[in-house]
Amino acid sequence: MGNKKPHILFLFSDTGGGHRSSTESIIEALHLEFGDSFTTEMVDFLKGGAPLPFNKMPDWYPEMVKAPYLWGLSFKISDGRLRARAITASMWPYIGKATKTLVKNHPADMIVAVHALATTAFLKVLSDGDIDERPHFITVVTDMVTSHALWFDTRADLSLVPTEMARQRALAYDMPPEKLRVVGQPLPERCAVPSGTKKELREKLGLPQDIFIALLVGGGDGMGPLKETAEAIANSGLYLGLVIIAGRNEKLKNELEAIDFGIPAFVYGFTKDMPDFMRAADVLITKAGPGTIAESLAAHLPLILFARLPGQEDGNVTYVEETETGVWAPNPEDVVRTLARWITHPPTREKVVQNCKKVAQPEASRNIARIIGERLGL
Image (cartoon, rainbow, N blue to C red; front, side, top):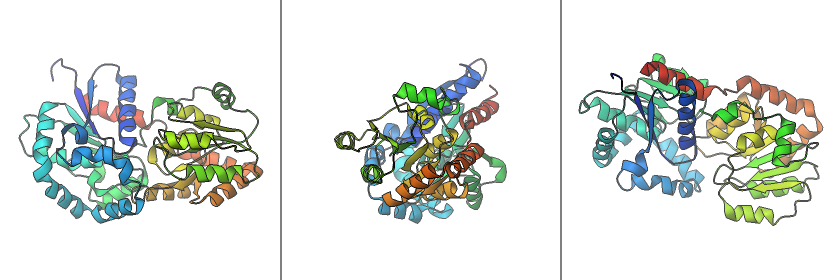
């Protein structure tokens, strides 16, 4: 490499918010660990290089997940080592040329795939011998437990997985144990290092100090039964504060702001202050997205999961239940029952807080950065 700084190419795509934010968290951690001794580049390989119809997938994703049954069915039908290979082989005539072009146009010393679809396609190009010098190739799996077979390819140098459950799944897909490391879910540094105490954060956010606060979140796009759940909580007779994050869903935000909840209620759109809101709250009510769960655990915040995407998020619910860091409450009545239990019997909730502390992996992004640095000799 001479005196040239090693260059790292991150392959991600905006099919769901998690791939971009995971990539940004890893890059942030790399700079915190190694300063500017390297260069990085983020490429949305679907939008930026794939042919039709694949380059439209990031735009279609929000609509696709509105049909959860079909999403779950397609996940299950395509999941499996042989089926994953068959999918890649059948797509190759359409994506092969574009994949080769992208690799040649973005030369790198290391490629980090932060998306399942990037793994096998790019490893095929690198293994075909057309590239002068094969870069290191690391996959960072962002599905917490139920990781699709497309994530795992034995030609990768390493697959970094978030949980032991995901590692077991990778082994079932024939990944060699020496190519697997459990590192946790990539998180921004702000999630790992609190910016204040609960009291200070409530003051900063303008939230009441002396009442139980439930944080209700539906991801960046405001998905899940947010409105129904908020109304059920407000009508339950429980006295608590309610913070609702509607994300980019402006219509939902306007509808929520028009409701007189009868309890202290605060409605927000998309916010970058989620780590502060989490540390200021007493419980998080949300869908079973892996990033949100990992952030909640890092904030030692008990979870009530009210929705999941069939297939890739099924295992996240199992993980939360088995680690006793929260509960599965698929309808508003279940949510209210859990809140009533935790409000009237604080030691029950406190036990869940301690479980969150036990399984949290706030150092995940730093772990990943150190592994990358070690491979590149940073």
